[in-house]
Image (cartoon, rainbow, N blue to C red; front, side, top):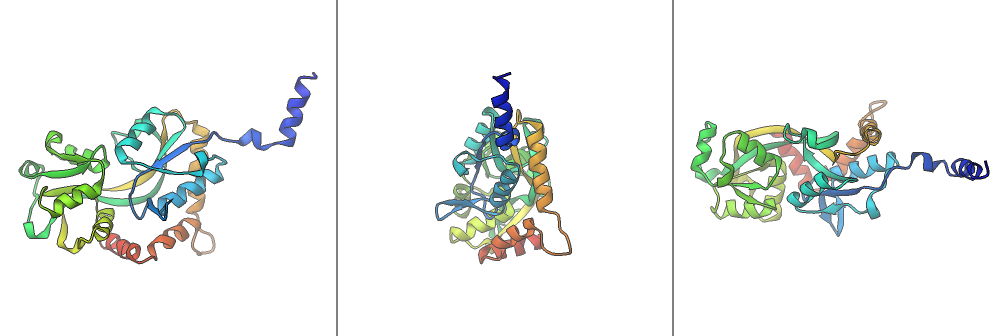
Length: 265
């Protein structure tokens, strides 16, 4: 009995021990305005949402730091290491059983982009074989492109989208498959006019999620999902917490332009 009593007192004095969740290594990539680095800090719509739902679930982020990695590195890590998470990830059929999912956080348009001046027309999947196509390795647009009929061996598979955007500008590739909204944002940061480019093939309108290692406890997944659902819940007709986060970024210069493009597509 003497050995049990201190444990009981400990739980009574420190009830947080009953509900504390394990610490997670949380990762993302550069995908503005959803996740990106500004002034040395990881910010963005998805970043603010993820930080909030982790806090609500009483689950800490290792060192309070979200790591920004090239997609391939982060995608590999979250499959191999327990207590890891990666956002903003497209939830595709190929990935469904590889992770536990929380979301959706937001959605984007995935498509194939070309210079308008090239007047490229893609009428069916067989047309892909006539062009050099850039992709981000292991990204959802790449997976969807291969499903649509492109030859994976012939793709220009790179780690960062900026590299293929520059190649597209220089005519070193003919097409680039990626998230349309982010591509336009990145073009502006690179001094490239997105009005000179067009989407020649639509791959999919897709939701972006927080993906957790497949061995993550289901109770934590439910807690994170409940937190996200609560953020999106409105009462009395006012803006909810999720909408306030979106507005924080989309009311800032080029981010507002980005949303206008998204709404018009």
